[in-house]
Length: 271
Image (cartoon, rainbow, N blue to C red):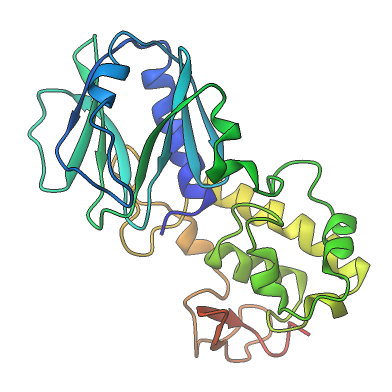
C-alpha cells in the first residue's frame, strides 16, 4: 500500500505537470472505487483551474476554483500524466482531461482508492479533519509523543501508526524508525522514556525523508508517476528481512504479528 513517501513522491511528480491547467472534463470508467464516484463530477469539474497539488497524510489534494479533489491511492493505485489519446489499460478507471490534450490518469487494480469532490477547503473534509500532525512538521517532537503515550498500554508500533496521533507513519517506516531508535516494536508505549521518544521522533523524520528522496519503496505494486519503482527498498534494514542477519550486530531479524500487521525487529539492537 502506498505510504506517505510514495504519496509525496507522486505529488512531486504530477504537481508541475498539472498546476495551472484548465480541466476540460473527466472520464469515469467505473461507478465505484472504495467509494462511489459521483457522476456529477462530469458537470462540476469542466472549466475549473488547478491551483495547487498538496498532500495531507496519505491523501492528495488537488485544489481548484471553489473546492478541490480528494484523492487516495488505496492499496495499489497510481497517477500518471499522459496524452489523453494514450491507449486505456484494464485498470485505468478515471481520466482528468485538460485543455492542453493531456490527462491525469488514475490506475487502480484493486479499486480501493478514493476520488471525491469537496466544496471549500479540502482540509475540513471529515476524512481529514480529525487527523494528527504531519510527521515531517515541527510539531512532531519527542515531548509530544511522550505526553500522548502516558498510561497507554498499546504497543509502541501501532501507537505511532495511529493516524489520530500522527499521520503517515505506515508499517514499513514504523519498523525502520523503531529499529534506528533502538526500540522494540512490542514495548508498551507508556513505558518508553522521554529520551527514547526524542530519538524516535527524529528517526521517523529521517526515515521518511530518506524514503521520499529515494522515490518511495516498491514492495509489490507501487510505481512512481514515471513508471519507475521506488528505490528505498534497497535501504531497508529490518522490514521484510525475517531470518536474515542484522546489519548492525548479525543477530537474526525476527518477524511477528503486531496489531494485525507484520512487524520486523532485531532482538539484540532493540530493547
